Image (cartoon, rainbow, N blue to C red; front, side, top):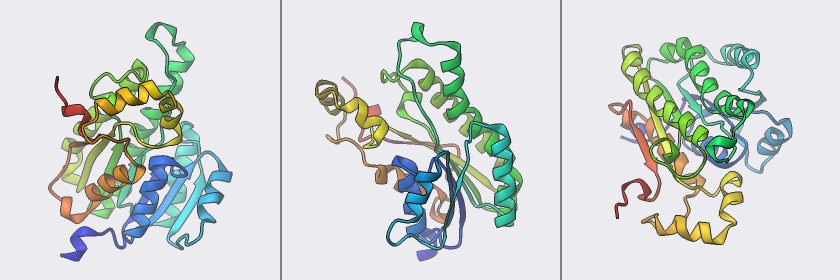
Length: 254
């Protein structure tokens, strides 16, 4: 029974793994016995994570800009040189530009889509052979409740996260025969640097909390726990699903 509830011996790749939700996922996976390779653009951030007290020998970090196609291909080579197969891919890296719809420039649109959506799509395809070789591959896409309903984050961000959820469904159906499960996690406001910048507005924070039945802002560990569960043997019959880690926000009616 214990083996159903851990990730011992699994090999995982996590994007955007130096802060916020990504870092929490990295730590959760390590605690559950996984071997983790995480990537981020900033070498300084990677070194900081690797130098933390108690950092595991099962943890490796690489500087990769996942919005760059050549760097994504180089990442595939690095992972292939490290492991014969990949058990878990977590597409977490993302960004946002909050603006009214009519104020977005073409470059801003492309930047958001080119960070949040296209790299996840491309990494899924690049690592498909390695995930298939695992025989029990898992993809977890970190989406957002902004991909399920309007939350004033900006339409382009919402579009990117909604497309990620639909991609999750399609890949789950298409790739199940290859032994790959594909799921998504959709957080509401989580205590990360990105969210905290918005929640400094006390009036807005109060409004957010008023629409959150759990009565608090989420923690990165809340999202990490859901991501970890989806990759466990205990979740072997779950695929194509999106778990909203939102304190009840998306089910609150009038």
